[in-house]
Length: 289
Image 1 (spheres, rainbow, N blue to C red):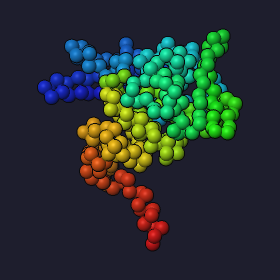
Image 2 (cartoon, helix red, strand yellow):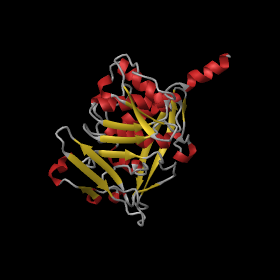
Image 3 (tube, rainbow, N blue to C red):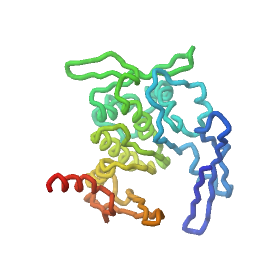
Image 4 (cartoon, rainbow, N blue to C red):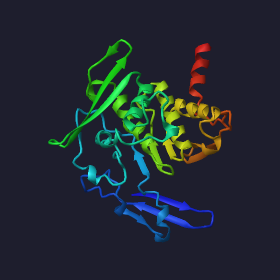
């Protein structure tokens, strides 16, 4: 069971419970009819509405083809919790969906989703171009990935023949580009399988999406993610009032404590608990001994 309890300033308490039947073959589906809202009077506040997105750290790995037969069972999560439906989504919406101006990459050909995907993915892997196709007979979608540089243009490769981080991060990039204003997006470990530069660019896109009104809850272990968001606040991409770092640590008795870390308009952190952004300095200190 997934459970959220919300308490409002006026004392109203709302208890949301999402029940998963582990005996079924499809356990990653979040359907609205499976959600129990115990106070029906405020159903319009339902955080599991159509603007709720969740992407698990356990993404689906690179595949030659992506099944689409259970896409209609996917409920409110357009790509699936594992990102398994991003290919058919790009087939259908890649040419028609228009990305919000604040999230548009300055070097993209247009505001079409596929052009924005290629531009932002190019920040992670320079020169990349992604193509999505659908096989009607087999009910499968497939991705083609090639590289275009000044003196080189490759053929299209399947996802299994490129770096693991490319197909892994693709659903995350698309999700951040399409999320509506006031949507809630939950991300786990967006830094996985990415070079530090790529991690920083993902954090910049997260900041732009948040500036556009998307509420993002991100669980991360990456210094680069945090530092890139600090840079975004200093550059005015996002207000420091819209950023909070919640740092969790355990005491000697293994009790977990939450430490709230604030940012100012220069990207400075209000405090540095042990273990936060200190490993680089500790290693350098050992090298200098």
